[in-house]
Amino acid sequence: MNYWNESVDTFLEALKSAKLWRAYVVTRPETGAVEASHPVMQSIADAIAGDTRDYHRHEGCFFEIGRESDHVLSAHVHWTMRGQAAGGVRFWSYNTVEDFVRDGLRLSRGMGQKNALAGLWWGGGKGVVARRKDRDHRDPKLRRAIYQDYGRFMTGLCGCYITAEDAGTTPEDMALVFSTTRHTTCIPQRFGGSGNPSILTATGVVVAMEAALQHLGKGTLEGKTVVMQGLGNVSLYMVKELQERRVGKIIGAEINEAMLNRVLETYPDAPVDARLVAPDDISIFGEKGDVFAPNAVGAILNPTTIPMIQTSIVCGAANNQLEDPTRDADALHERGVLYVPDFLANRMGIVNCANEQYGSLGNDPAIFAHLDRETPTGIYKRSLEVFNRAKQKGRTPADEAGVLADELSQELHPIWGNRGQQIIDYLVESGWAKGEPVT
Ligand code: NAD
Image (tube, rainbow, N blue to C red; front, top):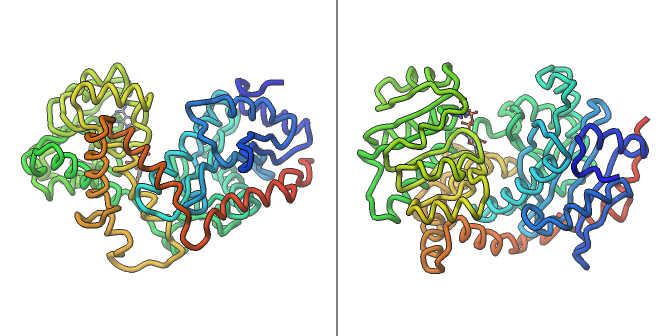
């Protein structure tokens, strides 16, 4: 049976009927063949192998049924030449196995690109847990079961992927993951973790805006107008950063009244002109200004919104802003809009937590180097490098950032080499997927 277009719940039942609780699809490094762990996985392996958009010779996609939670847990590993795969675990709703797996493929590659451009010695990884329609995903008992299961899943994967926080997952969920595995980051500060990344993410995006203005010869942010979609955690701190840089005006749209009021009450002197909108209201894209910052959700740059944009720069925090990476990057370029790829601008979330195990210090130079004007791998210099290379080669910045990231992703970790792939080979050869059946 072909499970690609079936629901994740149907896939879960198929694994159980086959008496499986673990399964994988891996790319064999020697031949490039895409291999399924079991016949029940063959349709998924075939779909992945035949895909040219989201599959980029990923090293592996791993699945496990949580023994306490009865949810499908997954971990997607793009490349691990720079180090073990690193990226957050998303807890989200998916209609089909295709949507579920594609999100893992796309996001793990995006993390690899983000880590490589940031000069981090980490590969690309992403976890995805599919919500079940018949369960209340806010129920604390269920969350405890899911995230402790996720930790056990990480332990079983022997560190080829190191997880972190992502959409739908909270710091307290990460504490539960940490209770069953060491292969996680983004744990709460009380356990030696790195805490809220939003402040640094906001600063990083503002530094990327400054690089974009510099590239266009438009000076600094002083007196400029910044238009923001979403006034959540990153935007809150971005308002402070922008106020410190004496922006002229911030125009914002938000769907949640409490979030909107929090910004206005926290920074009453900031030049914010904010309005409450309905979720389908896209009028913010038509606001005149200098920089448009998508700080809400992904896939919002598309054939409907791009023609509306009235700024010469788009630079924001949201992940995967382009609905179609090539089509929409081309459309922005044709309109003369400088698009700062999200994975270049919003790296500070992963920078903040990826190296937690190396300890922490105040004003940590390993973190703040990403925000200065001199460090070659910092956001400012790296952005200018991408814009200049793109101009020279006649590519869009999004394309050029991808090309550069893929080049950098192939550099070998200076101490551990391609250990992630070695771990995957070991999992395959030692029969990881044959574990005891679900009873
Ligand atoms: P958040 O959830 O705190 O803020 C997003 C805000 O956007 C919310 O207040 C929400 O109500 C609002 N929103 C949603 N849809 C909207 C719409 N259609 N119009 C207007 N407002 C809308 O999230 P955040 O932590 O501020 O992150 C913002 C974005 O940046 C997210 O996409 C996130 O994945 C990404 N990101 C965040 C970090 C981080 O460190 N927090 C790091 C990397 C990427």
